[in-house]
Image 1 (cartoon, rainbow, N blue to C red):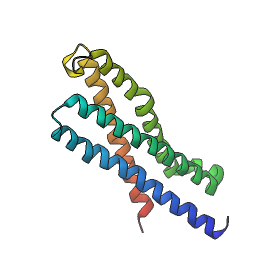
Image 2: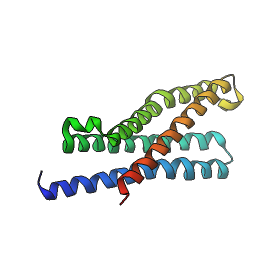
Image 3: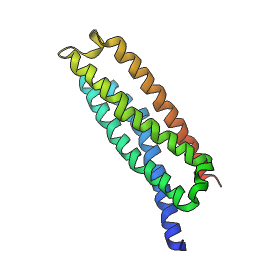
Image 4: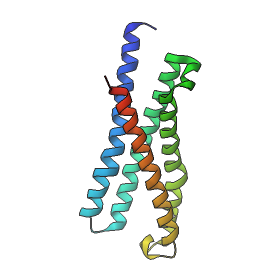
Length: 155
């Protein structure tokens, strides 16, 4: 691969890692807690938080796919033996699980609870369970992201 393309691929990978992991941390640990603290309408806060998490997940899907393809492009089949490949794959899998498996069920529970808030409905226990599970997965993805950043940028 020519030197300029290699430099471009590495630069894009750095930007992808920064965008993906930065969005995880900024939304999950800054924006959403502030939103729930500042917004008295918890249903509105939950809807806005869901939209932010979805936007971050789509960004993560794009970044994760680029990072996996970049590693395969550079190392070929040997990428499958690299720890970083599997860290990225795990993060991407968590992103997909949250976006396409857990969030839709949580949204459906909220819709079924209307006009009541889901936490004050018959669906509260199931919603709490899914919310707890998604929070654990999000934390795992965030920690994997920290590992990815540290491993990528250490000198």
